[in-house]
Structures are given as C-alpha cells and as structure tokens.
Image (cartoon, rainbow, N blue to C red; front, top):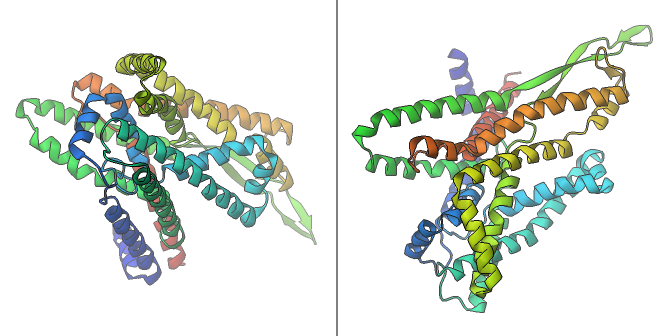
Amino acid sequence: MSTFFRKLKLAVTDTAIRNRILFVLGGLFVFRALSAVPVPGIDSTQLEQFLLQNQAVGNLLGFFNIFSGGGLKNLSIIMLGVSPYITASITMQLLTVMSPQLKAMHTEEGETGRHRFTQYTRLLALPLGVLQGFGFLTLLQNQGVVSGLSTFDFMASLIVIVAGSLLLMWIGELLTEFGIGNGVSIIIFAGIVAGLPNAISQLLFTFDVSQLPLYLGFLAAALVVIYGVVIMTEAERSVPITHAKQVRGGKTYGGVSSYLPLRINQAGVIPIIFAGSVLLFPQMILQALSGLEAAWVVRASDIVLAFLANQLWYGVLYFILVFLFTYFYTAVTFDPDAISKNLQRSGAFIPGVRPGLHTAEYLGSVITRLTLVGALFLGIIAILPLLMQAATGFTMLALGGTALLIVVSVVLELIRRIDSQLSLREY
C-alpha cells in the first residue's frame, strides 16, 4: 500500500506526468461535449419507438454505440465515432496479407514505414466514414427518425457526421501523442463508462426487493467475469529463448536465457467486431433498402428478422463466427516464419528446437493451441449477454461482454503506461 501511495504522490507532483493526465482529461471533456450535440432533425420519441420495435437494429446501434464512444445512442455529430478508423485499421492489417509491399512497410521499414502505413489508414477512414454515414442516415430517414431532410440537408448532415468522425480520430491521435495510452481506446472506454450512471439509475428506479437474491447473484457473476477477463487478458505462454555465446576480442558475449511471450488472447476484441459486423450489417442494409418496397427486399428482411429473433441460433452462429475469426486474425497478425528469422539473425534459438523451419513449425503449433483457448474465451464473452438474459429472464441484467473486455483492457494498459512513466522518473 505504501508503494501505491508513493507512486500516486509522484504522479501528482511530477509535472510531465501530471500534464499528460490533464491533457487526457481535457480531450475527454471535448469528446463528451461533442457527443451532446445532436444531428439536426432528430425525433427522439420516434427513435425510441423505432428501437423498441426493431430489436435487431437496436442491437446493431448498441453494438456500434460502443465504438462511437456513446455518440450513436444520442445521434450526435460524432455518431460514427472512431468506427471508420477502426474499420480502416482492420482492413489495412488484412491487406498486408495480400500485399507484400504493405507488409514490408508495416514491419520492415521502421518508423518511416509505420508513419506511411498510418497515413494510408487515415485516408481509408474517409470513404469508409462516408459509406457508414450514408447507410445510417438512410436507415434512420426511412424509419422516420430523421425527418424533413431535403437532398441538400441530407448531404450537409452526412458531411457533418463524417467531419465529426475525423475530428474524433484526430483527438484520439493527440491523446496518444501527448497523453498516456492509446487515444482511440481511451475514447471508447470513456463512452462506455459514461453510460454507467444512466444504467445504474434505471436499475434503481425499477428495483424490486423480491428480486434481491437475483441482483446479488448478478453482482457475484459480474465480479467473477471481471476476474476471468483480467486473467485471460494478462495470460501468456513463455517460450524459452537462449542466446548463443559469441567471443569478441577475448571476451564472451551472450549465453543468457530469456523468453518469448505469446499471449493467449492474441486477437483482442477484433474477432467480436468482425462477427458482429457479419451478423448485423445485412440487417442494416435491408432496413435501409426497405423504402424501395421491392418484394425480394421484404422477403429477405423477413427471413433475417426471423433468424435474429431466435436467440438460440443467433447465439450459436455468433459463437462460431467469433471462434473462426479469432483463428483467422491471429494467423494474419502472427507470423512464425518472421519470428524464426529474427531469432536466427540475432543468434537466438529455442532449446531443443532446430533454428529455421523447425522453429517456425514449433511456434505455429504453440500459437494454434493457445488460440483455441483464446477463441473459446472470446466466443463466451461475445454471447455473454444472451446467456445472462436466458438465465435471469431480465434484459436489463446483461453483462456486456465486449464492453467489459474493452474496459478491462484499457484500464490494464493505462496502469502499465503510468507505471512505466513513474519508473522512468524514479530512475
């Protein structure tokens, strides 16, 4: 405890760390202020009725509300949030598999290559933001949530929300550069946390003493889930590494042992985003096209709605998609051949494994087994709200697995960053 207070005092008294923390708080204040500015022409009553009548689309908006930092729920000028930037980042990482030039730029060209790669990501976020903004506005206009928009007003609203998304992307990058931690993750974290007071107040207003055991059981389950998320987020497999001895000028170098950390959850929350998009984007598109009154659109919409209404099949498919995307994304981002070559160049090897191809095969088999555990974990986290609703029968008592995973990951990352900054100041 004394160590905690000593570090807290150092964080408050050290000018550099204090300025970084204050910069993050200032950026979050601007973000929350922007999230309260609505898009012109919003009918809040019609929006509430629409979400109640269309549970599937409500799930879609709730899913993307997480990545808009809470702006989508209020249909603010930053309703798209950082979703276009996240989508662009995922797309660019996937393109590195198909383009050797992009892969070399991202991994082999150093800081200059990573800067160019980030710039391409920013440029890709613009057309993706236009597509997402057009889809959401068309959907809301067809349902009467956004009314009275002429073509000019529609285009003006589209420009406003795309500009809001790019502004939020810029704020996130400023937080990364001048603050502590990843700015985009902090914005998403702040949007999730900002919705907690409203959720707690709704729970208190509907509190029923007869359901007290259920509430206590839910609280205990929430603590267990948080503990499990922390353990799985921090868990890693340490692969032993030995550096070969080298004699230079009569002195011996190397011969030391270290380890290569392989995280169980290599993919993070990305597979859940992929799976959610695959399940929910078709529904959004069909809803946006419903104004055409085409027979095939109506039939397709009915089929999709009937499927999404069956929580069992929806949960099974969601779990399978998250499981498969976890393996896919891990295969994209983790390259055993590149790691094997880097170890061989530095004169390091895994004890009992021959360098080169055998090392790559060994690392591939290890990451495959670890990914199995990580995929099962992410699949359970993704369908956790459905499991809680099925167990309790209450829609309000549902642990948001995706939001919980993001919050825990951001908090742990912030703690590590602040601790590293304090360690630098102490030494």
